[in-house]
Structures are given as structure tokens and as C-alpha cells.
Length: 113
Length: 109
Image (tube, rainbow over all chains, first blue to last red; front, side):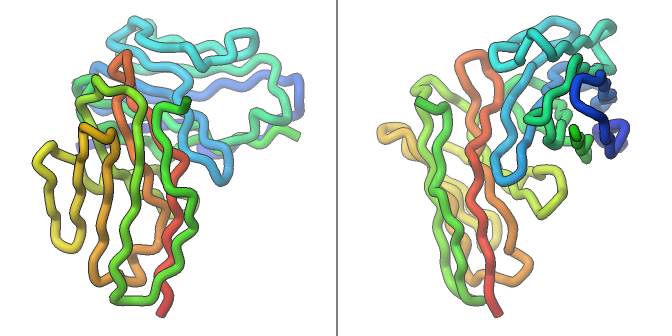
């Protein structure tokens, strides 16, 4: 069974530039999460989708971050404009139901310089 | 108050030792609990789910105490390969999954 796919794996951008990350969840998984993990910390939930609807985006910095899951499958997370403190690994995860285990992609390591 | 709080660590233990991690959660209505393992520069992976009656998987035992709102992970006979960060995960008010900050374990030869 294919796992959660993410791209790109690495990205280096200058501050104030824009960047987008892509995620393809495991087939059949209705729930999709985006997490931000700063070095030395646990993953922080940014946004959770159930199919193509947003369940929770309370910790998403909406002035610069946006995410969509238009057809209830793939998702994109965008940062515009990026700040130095956005340097982190962005992890996408999916689960069959909201209360079942989440499977993670390998993440996108973002460095903002 | 954070949704999930964990022992800060790090834990450095010799091979063969028994080590325990604790985690507290704030939402008394939480129904799903997990322990994830994360190796350096890798994604988190499920170690085990935590059930109300407690559960065991080989050298690993997970316990849930709903009254005190904490979960624990016990690792017996530690191996070098157990060195990793262990993340406590609890579902929150919107049935989303919240992670603790993680406890780093290093098993020393």
C-alpha cells in the first residue's frame, strides 16, 4: 500500500518569498493533517481536513499560511510571505477516521534564509 | 494549558534497563491515545495505540489512567535500537490529534 506522498523533500527560500507544499494522502483516508515541526519540538497541528472541509485551523497563521484540499484528496499548503521562523519540517499525515492513527509522509524541510 | 504535556527528558539509560515515560492530557473527553516513535530526521511512526485496559506489545507496555488524565509507556530490556524520541498523542476537542513535545531516549551500550 502506498504511503503518504509529499513534495518537495527540501526547499530553501529567502524571507518574504512564497512557497507551496503538496501532499497526497493514503487512498481512502478522509482525514488529512498538516503539521509544523520545529527542531527539538513535537509536531504542531496547523490544519485538519475532513474530506474537503476544514475541521480545525485554529493554529494556522492565516495572515501568511493557507491550505486547501479542493477535491478531498490532494492538499497544498502555502506560505506567503515566508519568515525566518517558518524554517521547519512540514509534515502531512492522513487517517481513515478522525480518531484513528495517523500515517505521516516524509515531510518537507523548509529553510528560510 | 497545553493539550498534551510530556516528561521533558532526555533519558539516557544503559542497555537492558527499564524506562518509563509519562504524559498528561487536558481534555477529559479524549478517546484516542497513541505513542509514536520518531527517529532523527524521520517522520513519526505509530508505536502503539493505548487502550483503556492497558496493552502490551513485546517489551512495550502502555497504560491509560482516565481519572488522572495521563498515559504512560514502559520499555523493558532497552535495546540500542530503542534510541529515539517518543511522542505522546491524544485526540482533542475537534477530534484532531495533538502531539506532545516528545521525550528523547538514548540507550547507552
